[in-house]
Length: 384
Ligand SMILES: *Cc1c(COP(=O)(O)O)cnc(C)c1O
Image (cartoon, rainbow, N blue to C red; front, top):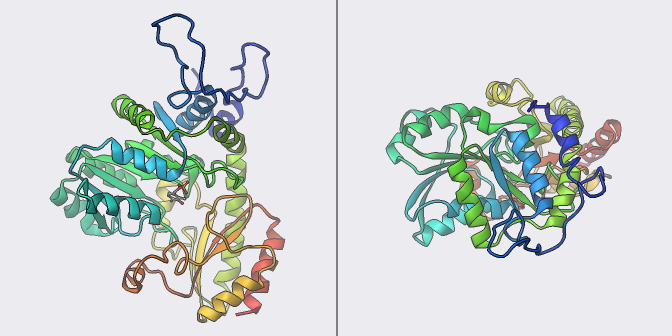
């Protein structure tokens, strides 16, 4: 079958699946169970915890977008990460980024402390990581998250995957920050790609969800088995809403990026701003690698102001249309303060190690009018 481009895949997903009435939008199957056609004969849909047509519409669309052979939709991004942890054997060695998502850090550290696996939190951007560390540890799984939150540092998925193959390790990539629109880890050598669909894929800030896609049939059957065994698959209604969001993913990503770039330009030239972190800037340490492995720089940015915590508070209060809130990737622009929010659980020393200062502010650029957004940021800057 012809492989369509991403916008077309998202627009066409599930269309033509209603054989009864020809509805254009695929119907929502809320039913928890399905009638058996014949005693003792297995069928595609029996019980919604295991399989459901509405969930399948979303799985199929994401599988096409990520170029995999299949996947699973889970009840949250963390449920997706939990599922990957569960396909590992006991005492597996897992390497994770030292600055990974807080929930990922909490989960793997706790599993490690319970003696279920060994977690190694390492700076994967260092030269020695691929050259030495991977073969020294000889891991079973390398968890990659690129670009990182909130400093947008990227690591080379292709290079890491190559080293991982040499020691038979799986590579799973958290692709939440870019979405399948801007980065496709399976094409770069990864075995599993993970999304918190809560963010860009749904994009409307009204669903908590997760997804895993793989290009390996053996991994896929393990994922399906454990998703059902653990009971963490996503609900049909959430899957329906998420597919609705996915339809407009490409065009939203373009506007997110346009708005982020405009804010970056304003901040970069401003006397009250110290550093700006955005991979689209040639001065960003990950500019070259981002340019190589991504098809865009995304809608996230962060920066340090030339003031203290009170200045941060004034800036945030001064912006009229950008609320202070957790999460990212929605239609609405959001501001957050990593030091007290996403990274609040780290010790001051750990924060210093991953580069999170008190003066650091993160913005998820939404879909508002660009001039209105710039005005909001200017209002904030006046209060610093
Ligand atoms: C939000 C997020 C997660 C967790 O997803 P939930 O849907 O909140 O469970 C994992 N990784 C990254 C990068 C995230 O931003």
